[in-house]
Image 1: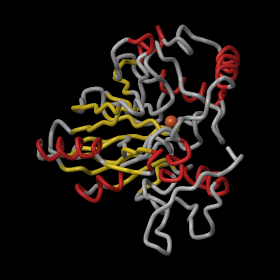
Image 2: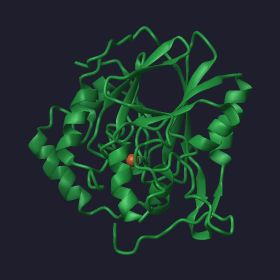
Image 3: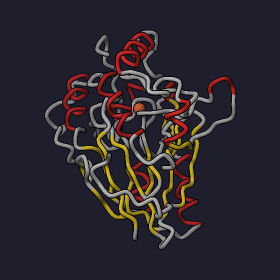
Length: 295
Ligand SMILES: [Fe+2]
């Protein structure tokens, strides 16, 4: 059981925004009793080949928030994404709100600070974020209380956010026909992921689960919402009580066949800085590095 109170009677209003470039879903999570909301896992657009960033996806979220006259209280990152860049600081600049991530961001910063030779000016204490969540921490979105569950395995800093009858699982689970996320990034671990998934599956059966990604397996249409009961019954990697041993074997074998995500190099450099580009250089420009033979 979760070690925080679960209030299934609180039903946040949730709007998903799908980014076709990275198959990421960002969410606006609104308190039904007020205008307060949180934005989960926003996306900054990048044309990596051209070194060009833009904000069409984030602007869509901003337009939605403004059209509904909402007040952004939180910009939540379920983890340090390796496949897309966060737009949290851009949205914060336009709409306010506090940027929050799991406290183990410091481990991710330590690892990738080295990979990118980020130098001593890159703080590895999580201070780029407004709030570092510990397992079991809570926060308010208007009249709702969100709770944070540490669900590592995909990365050390992964958190699942439970808000009323909804849980944002980040990259622990995918939709039942998509299975689970990879566990082979630095600091990832398949057995740890298995245990984190069991924590999610121990939530109430009718809890709504919201995915961070959907790759539309088999060419079906994109979906991002399911329930604990559906995942327990049908998840192709962990459903029907799959054992830890079977899961770890499957996950490890599968991960060995996967290429690095196309945007891992720009994504990590930006996301480890809470969505900021690396600092300006002497000509006033921002540059992203490509570490050679380090990933
Ligand atoms: Fe991820």
